[in-house]
Image (cartoon, rainbow, N blue to C red; front, side, top):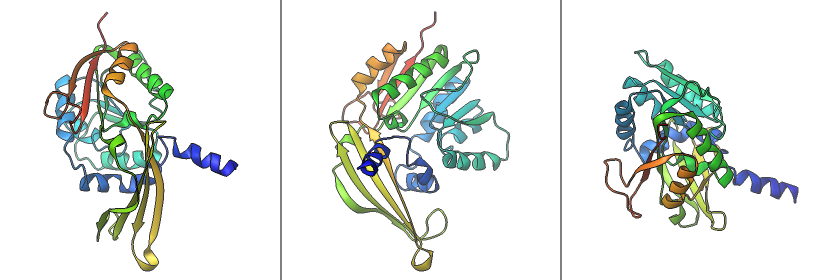
Amino acid sequence: MSGKKDQSKRITEGWQGWDEYAAFYDWENAQTMGRVDVDFWRDFARRINGRTLELGCGTGRLLLPIARSGVEIVGIDRSAPMLAHAHDRLRRLRTPVRASIVRGDMRHLPFDRDRPFDLVIAAYGVLQSLVRERDLTATLKAVSDLLAPGGTFALDLVPDVPRWQEYSRRVSLRTTRGPRGLPLTLIESVRQDVAKKLTIFDQEFVEGRGRTRRVHRFTLTFRTVGIRPLRRRLERAGLRVDAVLGSYDGQPWDERADVWMILASKPRR
């Protein structure tokens, strides 16, 4: 019985699974999402042109393009393997950038309030990995505390998470050459915990064939977060919602939009 309880607890923790995902994250994103959001975040950060913090920076998928545009940026992530990829990518840059990476928890941001940020980014639904209300509340407070007066908090959500149909062991992706040069197959299952508003992805990456075959299994959990409740939470954290968008090219928000974005700011005192 205790084993089952422990397993259930592991499944509902949104930060778990990302260490195992690190080796495949960039490859899978290139097959599915591509770079549709990179230009937006790079250009947005460049327009703000101030000290920037990215929550859940992972492998540096956004951090590096933003840094290369000349913006001073700090990335924070809890996963050491994800950050190892970001460090490697930073080391390979041929031109110097003002970028640093910190391993830490976005619920308790380990930064000095005397050096606030002009922009905080929470991209690609990273807030949806906060599976408990208290975790989201703590993160929004931490962001508000570290934003400079007049600073901007920009975030996006993945709106279709609760609409994923449950299925078991579906082959989602297959290639003859994965990120490490071996054949790779992604077998995926989806479960919905409607009561807790959680969508749970059981991932199985099968790498190689025959004697080289290795199976990597892990679980990723995401929470449904709606625009209207999130607006109220941002306001309770002392932030003002300035815009709600439905695309990376500035279209108005609509419940049917592929992406939901909120731009909020910290009032000047």
